[in-house]
Image 1 (cartoon, rainbow, N blue to C red):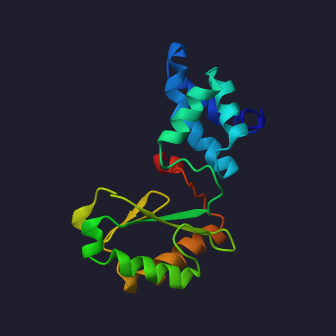
Image 2: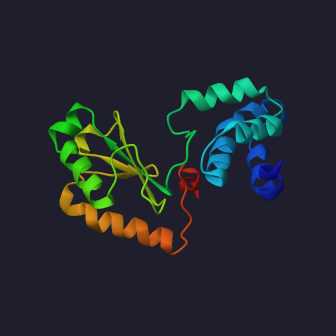
Length: 175
């Protein structure tokens, strides 16, 4: 189990947060870790998490399939989720998506060639009063109009290039 061997201290720390008879409670944090390590959750990484927690593979697979923040295909280091629900659309989400597609040279649902950005359309990020809303690896960016996009993308790209830890799962947000 490569995941456990390479991240033993972190995994043991996660498991220590929960009673021994409730190891299942560590499922989401371990899936977040596996996703950050492997960039996605495929059969092998799901099996690894299941083995660490001594759970049936299908139980872990079902959880991965239920949550939209688990990715079964490769994504960039920064996942840009733009809410395109009605309130955000009324406030400029379509223009925001078009601007991001133009600046990044990709369409929604794609990843840049350098694997830094993945752009996705999502439904309701629960910040309608701040529309249009974008999340970059679960960090909220509110009232994002095209005049703010270049500075935001530059900062995010600079963070990646500087080696700043990024987490597509948001697990580093706890720190």
